[in-house]
Image (cartoon, helix red, strand yellow):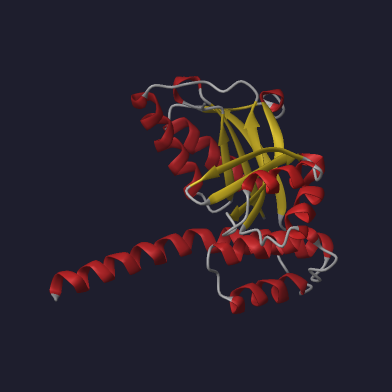
Length: 236
């Protein structure tokens, strides 16, 4: 009885800890989307995606609605998107996408995190050619449907690559075809569980297990920062 209680409490605390880190980031994405394109999901695709991703993380509807309402207020905080590039331990390359209301704070925090993790930030744009921006749509593999047929249908909507892993599908397309691939998935009657823009390395590099441990420690610290939305690397 005691052990079961401790296990449930530990599981709850772990879930709450994740929510306390993820929810503020999701709210910022919603805020930014509303500030840029308004509160109507029908006309604001960026907001529709932000809400979709919030639901994927089990954010309650009240939290989502509250974030939209606050973003519409005249005194809503000014949020901007900014990316930083850096080199980490063993020469790994990192691209860090952020949403922030204070770029001075964000860059100062990242400089400290990189320095303590054996890396450094580099001049903006210096790693741009090492990554390609891609649209990524994730969805559960539909029961009873042929994935080869789905793949063929999505090629007409800009699909470049379709990966399937443990019942989950990952559809990649060019950044410019973001709306096209999203519409393609919807047209097949498939509900996307998550949509995002990712950075795929043009020349992936393999690292040893020990090297990857050092790299993962740095990535964990970066992702813990409230302003950080996503971290991409050139790891193969």
